[in-house]
Amino acid sequence: MMKLDVRAFALACGTLWGVTVFLATLFLIATGRDGSLISHLGYFYLGYTFSVGGAVVGLVWGFVDGAVAGGLLALLYNRFAR
Image (spheres, rainbow, N blue to C red):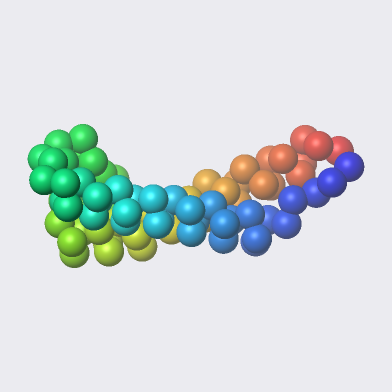
């Protein structure tokens, strides 16, 4: 049975989620949307606002959030795939 590399999977998930939050925020700003839905990330990501600076904060928090979730998912997968 194939095992997942926990560090690599965590890094990939963190990068994917951080970049997604960053680009989604910038896209909504560029298209003139109000950002009412994505601004709720401020409840979970300390310092996040619907702004360019907030996009950078979202990138950092998104990376951390995605890395932790990806690492836990890989650990669970490896545990139950035996």
